[in-house]
Image (tube, rainbow, N blue to C red):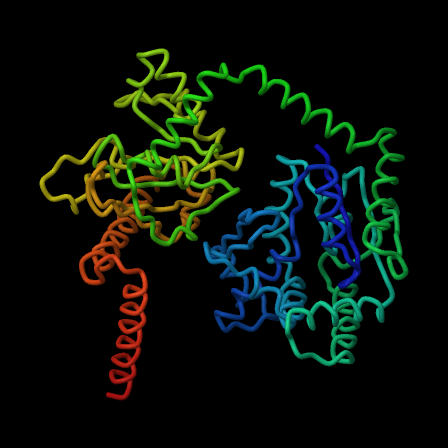
Length: 477
């Protein structure tokens, strides 16, 4: 594993440089600072004293931090909520420094960071990466700059974000954080003897990045970037060898186009769909056409779909289905091969579509869902993947007015760390309840708001306002 550790004081440019190095080497950048900020945000929202371990520590079991890829950036999610903007507010730097003093918080996040680093090639930056998180890393760096230069950078960054802040205040906060980081009792900021120090005061980001890469080449005796590119090239070569013949690819492309063209469907709240990151996509199931629009309009080429094994009986159809990303599963038995393929896809940051009912719902009441199988909960817990719920209003068809709603993603993080056998039934019930809630929202959208997203949003605002007014009246009584 390639584990690159970068330490240094606040504002030295660690995060920016770490991201550039990760991009150069095609490895993962783990934003440890964002993790501390997320913990601090949760503690602030709970109204506890950030300096008291007895108040902060009990909250840690309630916290789940995940990173979702959005284009070239990663969104930081706290218990399934995107807090990327909230944790970057100026005051969060101070709050993060406060909670980072607590041994319980540091141990909680250090264990999380070590686990990720043991399973992935990563670049980590922080205050105690070289001394505490990854003390055995071959590649250790200490990035610093003068306090004035670091304050200037931070001041410019906040101004660009529209935050009104005084430079002297920023400089004081930098000095205060330097003192707190260096003097905290547990895992303070230090430059280890085997870390290479780089002063970035008078150097731009590209220069610092290249200096670090040069040191890595010297340490390892070879260019890590070249080696990584060779490995990727080898993987691409293997993939090319496995590619289907041109006719199958062309036919699959045609089928994908037909899927999106013939089964015309209006998709609501498409922005809720998670892209470029692992996710389990679930949907109610009425007909064999249900996957068509989802494959064509949402999943894309890298998505995967669990489908019944019968599709493999015809070799030609099986080849086309494989090209479309289908994972055949033998229903009614433990299909280990299918399970491995689903988990492999999730580990490769792909989305997998699963119909949790397990079979088509042919009941007269199209709003009533069948009981859910436990496979979705099992996969979500094993891969710690978010679940994206989809809901068709009713049975799809070529000449019908099809409607598909994308619900907000959710996680099963409250069950993480528990024994699978003990929680998968409870987790499955929770998934069912989330889909039932989405069913109600779909009915409101279609039946009360006549399929108008604008009317639906207005309806929800009025409903929220009415609930607030009623709550105020009750409190006055």
